[in-house]
Image: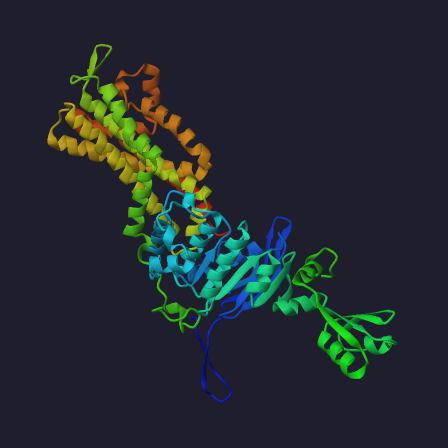
Length: 312
Length: 265
């Protein structure tokens, strides 16, 4: 059953739709390597989430388990309320893998027709080619397509079953800047229709620009999970700078979220997880002027959370 | 969009699985087109047996070997089995290339079942085998081979049946070897099978040493059975045993490797 019918306190019936992805206590080891070391992940329908992490963080292993290509040693994986293989056979989940997976001696259109033929219901071939932006190269052999064109073909194939969940594993690896932008434009346009999208990437800017939610992986574990802004704040917050003669270090340090206060002559430098509170205090309760708030970029957060020096 | 917005569909259970595990006509037709586009396969499986037959049949009366005249019909059937074997093996061995390209993995992300995939590969291999038999028989018909009409049909069907045995052999090699080696390994192996199994020269005309080895070669039974409607005489049960044993050996080997390949680890 993918629909659970529950009665609330007043006895009314309510229907709940299943989670797009539900990983619970998932472990997967390869020999001595703990590729995935206890992941709990719950994705709601309609979310666009990025799995971000350096190489070896467990992104591909996690995705393979969501797609049913491999099994967890421990824990459970459910996709849309069912086993991954059941969701795949119904065309509810589609994936765009990093490389390979195409026959070089077929044309773009033949590859799409061939793939469409194995689904019980598939969108029309022309429609998916159009949406992936490759309708004009339909008669080109796959071997003659650029890396970006091949990737858009994989995307077109993934659109065929009209999946509720689209999974992309490092979809723009090896593409040039323009290819990446075109690719994400197509994905973004498509996701506007309510499809759940989960993509793995090690490009920070991609996660920042295209995901509503970022799940940061490190050594097989989730080390941060939230919006891009939340993930940034988690590691290092923001710094607030101001000109404030005779600053009271104790008062500033007592503000909520403040991690450090540095005073250099008339300038103060405050590191805080809650820069708004610091700024509000400075502007309303002190004669501070020239207040600047510097946002740490995602890259700094990424390095702080995934680097070897960070606490586990 | 005629379907509901993805993600807002009320029941995901309502989505259907494809019939026959995804096996369908469009898939087969595109596979045929792909096969014909591969010039190497076409030359190897259709042109090579044809040329070999033209060279070996010599003239209308057939080749002479140590005073014995070999009926061109005998040669034609042997070459047809050779073509069917070559075609079916290379058809089956295509899984090697598809695995190397990651296509098999891609198909695992679709509703196509592994068994439907194997069924498609066997059908393609047998179709290629049939084409090869028909090419050799057409050349035979135009170059003076004479048999009773029923013998033409029976021997062609039996020669074609050889492709089933060797489609399994091709699948086995395809799952065993990496793609760059698969054809290099298969070519000489099939050459030895053909020579020892009596496809080019009938077994009873081979040197004694080869005659003793012949019954243990995979082509021995299929060739003898394919020629039986022409040559008549007593039916040797060893032929049938040869076919059954080799079909079982290749089939089980292919199945074991196929299981290993598609197992969800």
